[in-house]
Amino acid sequence: DAKTTQPPSMDCAEGRAANLPCNHSTISGNEYVYWYRQIHSQGPQYIIHGLKNNETNEMASLIITEDRKSSTLILPHATLRDTAVYYCIVKGSQGNLIFGKGTKLSVKP
Amino acid sequence: GAVVSQHPSRVICKSGTSVKIECRSLDFQATTMFWYRQFPKKSLMLMATSNEGSKATYEQGVEKDKFLINHASLTLSTLTVTSAHPEDSSFYICSARGPGGLALYEQYFGPGTRLTVT
Image 1 (spheres, rainbow over the protein chains, first blue to last red):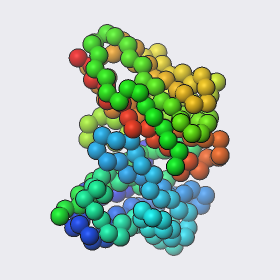
Image 2: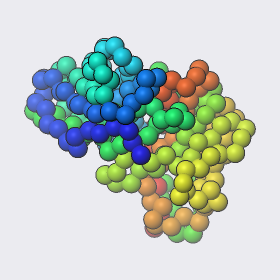
Image 3: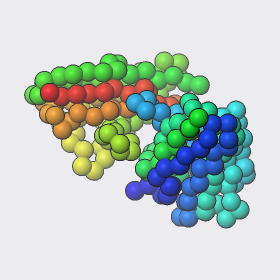
Image 4: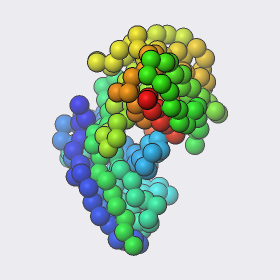
């Protein structure tokens, strides 16, 4: 079973920041939080990952709470092409990606 | 980033026939490859994990005699759906990981293969 919980869907206005939450209350000390997204009928695309500190790259920012029980993925200026299902994933014990249901983000004009 | 390709992208076959799907890592050596299946409006479900030169490890509930996996080289893995039936119609996605360790971000996904069994 997935070790994360996410809201099933969210809407965001084009040009605004999209903040996608994720709960991972059972995460262990050496597990990373990873975010992938899947645009319709394509393979998943890596976005970002982190352990304790906040992270930023050209795609997004990842904010991890101090207790590491939750995190937020931030797309600073959402575009229509960011419409996708976003998956928050904690690495499984055997190193396999376990996908939950994700959050379907709809960016609207 | 690393590129993973799949062939074919779409395939339609008749019930009872077998279909082979190829997954290739184009610019890195994939010591481990993963096969996922995704039904409409559902999440990805891991089917099996294969290490180059070894037998694949199947997830619970996945029939190894029906879904044959071969990982004979460091750049190629194949999934053969034998005696396909309409309920096998799905989106099959492969993923490849290089020898650089167990960091999750090193796992790269292919574009997927849409299988339709009539």
